[in-house]
Length: 236
Length: 236
DNA sequence: ATAAATGATTTGTATGACAAATGACCCTGA
DNA sequence: TCAGGGTCATTTGTCATACAAATCATTTAT
Image: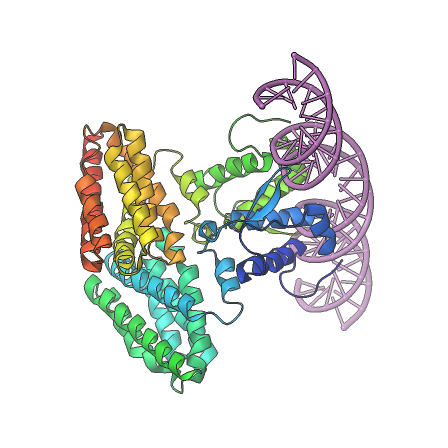
């Protein structure tokens, strides 16, 4: 059987399909899935491929499988919420307001601390990465280029902390930024609005001023939250 | 073929073995793995099982696989560092000092903020969970019971934030606590030392005092970091 | 009535075959 | 000599089938 869209591998497509169903709420937690053979034929793939997909979903914490009992959707608290796919699936439909709030809260917790740590421990190469991302933001001629550079900037800051655990939180920041652009920036006339604030973050990291870096990052996030809030008030 | 230790499933054991090799540094990033058939026979499992294991490792970001080229170990920056298994594998050998520092840094960033959020948004049931964990710590007669209740306490706080993204960071806190007990508490005469500090956290959450909760949590973590530091100084 | 044995169902594992992709090589032509 | 294209070999991707292992439900024996 052949599909055309999505990842090039069959099991990847099955992962997408089932993952979206589960995270999207079509399959409630605790609910039992059809047995492998039935599910495989229903999705028109071999049992081999289906099982590889199930293993992936299991490592994301979405399902649980025991012999004879079959597979069940796990409770939400076991989901690997920081997984890039899980985050993306949650945003597949228009993200709910409270999910956006949670993303922003994560940014408020993580990114100021990360900026401070970067200011303390960054090396010259990492600083250059931040600088390059900032330059790209400055040079961006359209929203897409801006958005891409913005994401790069925040990733560079996370990497510059030299704490790879913080680095792995990039999936969350990335999703938050994507949602932000989706919900607000498309309607904002001047997308370069936050450039000075990014410069403040960059400058504090360059000058090795942890507190200033954290403050600047806080200001940046706070502003973006306000933008989201006004946008949200306008929406209905 | 049959193995006796580890997870009950064969592919789970293969995941463990390969994962530990990669994270442990036996297989360097960029290095190519043997082709599936060879690797399968070398590990004495069928190709089916091996492939399921490889898919799991791929979702953890440890390996990358393309047709004809084969499999390669991915660069460290792509590893899903927040994954419980990856964290555990990093601690499989005695964890290095700088890794412990990174774990503590994560705690310092996440847990005070989580305590504050819990103080703001917890409901009564979630408070009861925190209380129950605290009571269990108080009632603990030996180190194992204490450690288990301690982990429960910190999990309960994370859950009480009502932000499941924060909740998914439990894997990190859990690993940090396990490492802490491994490195320090086993040698500490009075393992109940931090009980009052835990009470302060609980009380602030109960009274809905975000700042007090964050401060209490900061003090708790700061103390445990000091304990690690003195322990470390003694070690050589 | 309780406990052990049995059977049925579902996942777990093994094997062999073929499809698809892609890097390497060769071969031709300017 | 170099550029271009085409063939081939190698490796992962997919499929189908068979059997092993675990476990829930029922039945049977004491």
